[in-house]
Amino acid sequence: MRTTWLVSLAAVIAALLWWQFKPAPVTNLQLHTIETGLVERISANSRAGTVYACTSASLSLRVGGRVSQLFVDEGERVKAEQLLLELDNAEEQARLALAQADLRAAQIEQQSACDSASLAKREAARAESLVQQKLVSGERLDQLETDAQLRALSCSHSQAMTERASAARDLAQIQFDSTKLYAPFAGTIAAVNGDIGEIVTPSPPGIQTPPAVELLDDSCLYIEAPIDEVEASKVSVGQQTRVTLDAFRGQVFTGAVSRTGTRVSALEKQARTLDIEVTLIDPPEEVKLLVGYSADVEIITGYADKVVRVPTEALLGGNQLVRYNPQSKRLEKVEVEVGLANWSWSEIRSGVTAGEQILTRLENLDTLLKSEVNPL
Image (cartoon, rainbow, N blue to C red; front, side, top):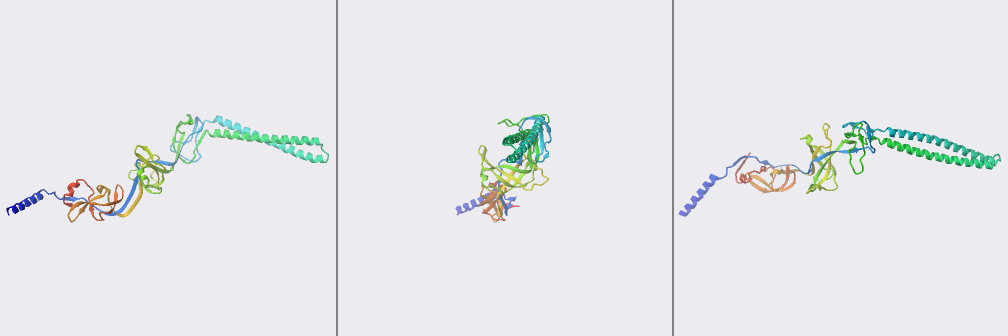
């Protein structure tokens, strides 16, 4: 009897102590209500990408010399075949004039020689008919035929000399044109390395010197960015992308993968990447993109719509959520199956359903699991 009384007393004391020291209920705890929506699988660049022009060229002259005329400035728009720069070419111009005069003289000499050859041939033909009438001797006919042959050779020689003079004229024209630099395509002048009066020289073999003019076509731009090799197999041409640039913070541009690299590069130790190219789709006209801007790229490699999703930050250990049980008014860990995921949202295929509430801020979790919870 006394033992029973002591046990009852101990139980009462234990209950009083538990009531006295039990964790106070957590009130106004903010929970997240699970919903359905879109979840995307995203691959992002491992280092900042760069804006490039689809077409660019570093232009240099094949010959050296002093700059006599400069027809463009940096930032200027030019047309295809527009003259950009010209060297002092008085000597080349004189050679070209001499070659043109030699060609004209050769053409006149050819005309004269060939006309004489034609006349001699006709005279020999007439003499041949007169020999049959015994009006011209055979000896005279031989003389006329020999003269016609010699004049025909002279005509052929004159033709060869004309061709030679024409080739010399073409060579002089090439040398003259080599002192001029033309735009191979329409674009914008990115840089001019030189000024009037300065000497420019072509690059010696194996030695890179600054180009005279740098030209780029900024009407067509693309972004090149490195993707980690782990993500490379998920990326393909045509996938939609989101692009952000430091120069336009807060703006997101739509693009598409236009090319993927053919090999993985290892520029840094244990950092193997695949270069991909992204073309922007209908960028706003008021946005002036410049070559060289840094850019970040998110490639949408897969998606699932109208699926149960939770904030990715709510996942514990990658496969658990902390769910609120309204019957016990407590939080409890539950295992879930995760599908597609990114750093914002994760698809939940099983373990919880839409409408249930979960904890997203996992600070002081051990204390919260031992306490009653009164959510907001």
